Length: 387
Image 1 (cartoon, rainbow, N blue to C red):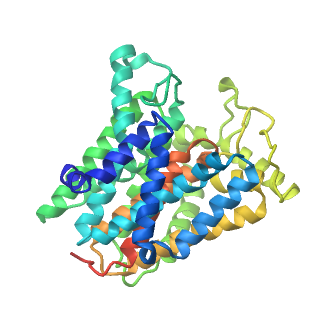
Image 2 (cartoon, rainbow, N blue to C red; image 1 turned 60 degrees about the horizontal axis):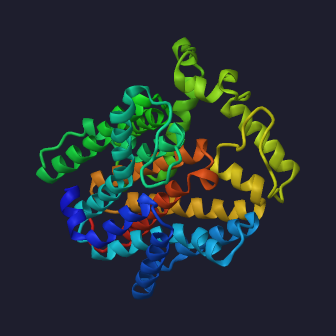
């Protein structure tokens, strides 16, 4: 399914692959120019309230952080927007649910391609003992394992497809492709000891059980969040000692001074909130927290700390619009598989947004979010659904 869909839109995906390689900035400019041509051809399709608020947020964020320079500023604003444009314009050529899923899976595969090749390159040279990982195409520098793991967030979210039973041949192809992508991530990320992806996997498994129990046409997204909150509260009242010894709990709540980090995630968020309320207009020169953290490791909090409440408000509106589109799609007559995959990818997106400094170091992940956002927005208004 993935390979056949890539061949259908080979120009788009070849350009994406070259952009992800990052050999030269010139390819980013080509990608932007190409997306602008698509915007010109499909302006009525692409330009909507989602596009407008995403664009305004990026402009406001860039101006507030003062990157400087016309060329650099154009790229920092238009590069993520270009992914939204391409994602939404591609939906114009889609003829049904299975092509929507093929588009998303193909993008994930291209997004993973360079990291996968890079992993095996490092594996052949250093075995399983390498402490750093060079991402091919990014020069001679090395990438942190945490940053590297973000490339596989979407893969982990697809793991619940293992438990999706179907007799439909097309559904079986979807299941097989989704499982393949998730197994690749489990093997690679498991070998380097990163944990956020496995948290995404567990959360999607929980969501999968909820999805299988309800009818989307009658139950709104707010019900799922309500049910999830009740489950979270219920679990928090139970004394599970093994949870306090788990790596996920340590990642979020336990002091990790051995790594030079003197605050846990929950503590740094609390400090970040205090910093934000003390200075809601933002601080472009904000350099980090006492104890080793340079960032609050949360998309919204990091944006608020450096850019202030106005830019944070724009980001929040854009976030709400994404969730509104997701909720509207869940109520339409799309196939269950389509709804589940959009839900799973959204879990991967917002889980990563919650724990990493996205705009300060994970910009490609934000671009991938913009692509999914574009496909979601386009699919929501697609006239060919449920096929």
